Image (cartoon, rainbow, N blue to C red; front, top):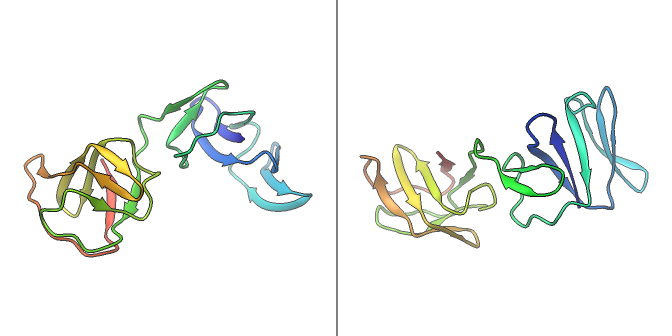
Length: 151
């Protein structure tokens, strides 16, 4: 595996299989496979990005969620994930179904509407162990497709 990181912060911007060819120049980055360009990134150049190769697999990778220092991964403490509800929920559920859990940390706090909800785990596409209406907010019912923002 390989990752393109932002210089100075080591934040992982892109995570790619070894079959991808990455060419970072002074004007852009081109990602190709088999000689065919698949993506050209204008704001990712030799002045602000570095390619790290032979990186360990990161099963829950999500853009900006992790840092890679050249030898190992760490969580980017400044990252805040976002996804959406995949079904309606009432004000008492303790499992929150989301479109993708990769944007979220292993535990933390999310916000839906005005409600803050803590969670203690991630299982498949669910935030689990949820405590509703935290930080002086009130638990409420929500409709499918609303944003779930990590705070």
